[in-house]
Length: 398
Image 1: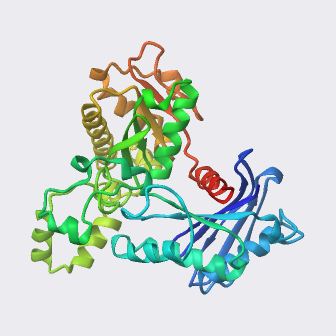
Image 2: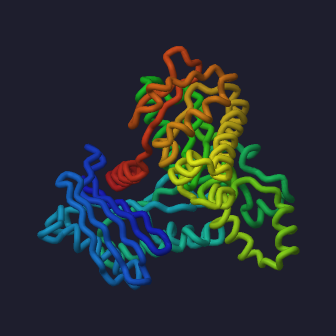
C-alpha cells in the first residue's frame, strides 16, 4: 500500500510517500515559502536523488499540485499516476477533546477541526487548508485520515489535565491541558517496549521529545498519564524560542511597563524567548554548544537551564508514576546531543540511572545506560510519518 503523508504548516508543507508495511520511503520533500514565491525540495532516498525547484505557490493548493507533479513526473517521479496512491494521512495538531484516536476525514470531522481553531489558531487553519487542498487536487475518491498530536494525551486523568482556575472555564471554554507531540511519544514508547521485548503494559516510561519544540510525557501501561505542554505548546520546558513555564504575573508586569499588547507579549514568549532569549546566540542547540565551548557564559546558561528543566520534569513524572523503568531521548536534540543527555543523566542518579559514556557517544537507536542501571535509558529516533501512515492504512482498510 502507498500512503501519502502530509504535514501542512502555515507557509510550508512536508510530505512523504511511503509503504507502512515495509517502512519504505519512496519519496519525500518540503514545500516552502507558500504564499511568497515558492520552493520545493524533492528527494528519492533509494536513488540518493535530491533536487530543488522554484515553483509559484500562492496557496497550499498549488503546493499540493506541485507535489503530485513531482511524484508522477518521468524524471523524478516514483509513481506512474495518482491512482497508485491508496490514501492520504494528514498530521493535525489539535483535536481537542473530540478525538482520542486517528479518524477518517468526513464533513463532521472537518467541522470538529474548525471548532478547534480557537485552541490552535496558528496550526489548525494550516492543517485544514492542507486537507482541503488535497481534496481539491485529488478528488473525493482518495480516502484521507487525520492523525492528531493531541490524541495520545487524551488518556490523562482529570487531576493531570485540569488547571486550578474556575471550573466554568473548562465547562464553557475547554481550558485544560492538552499536550502535543503525541504521535512522537506514542511511537517511541511502543518502539522501546518492542526493543526491550517487554509488554508496554508492564512498563513505566518517560519520553523526552527534545528539539526546537520540546515536551516530556509520562506513559504508564502504554497510556499517557501526564505531559509537559499544556493548553498550548508554549509551556513546559524552555525550548528553542518558547519560554516554557513562566509566572503569569511576568506578563502583566512587562505589558504594563512597556505597553505591549497581549499579541506582542505572546510573540515575545513564542518567538524570542527560550534558549534564544537567554543566550542571545541562537535557538539551535548546536550553535549554543559551539558558543559555550568558546566561553560564552549565556550560551552555557541556556544549555544548563534546559538540562535542569528536563531533569526536574523527569523527576516529577517518576513521582507521578511511583517509579520509572525506561527514559527515552528523541527528536533533534534528544537523538543527537550526547552532551545534553549526559548532563540530564547526572541529575537522575538518585533513580539508580547509570550512563554508559561510550554508548552515549554513539548515534542511532540504542541503549545508552549500563547493564546494571536500574532505569534503562534509550535513544530512539522518532518516526511520526510512519505512525501517520500506519494509522491511515489501518483505518482505510477497515
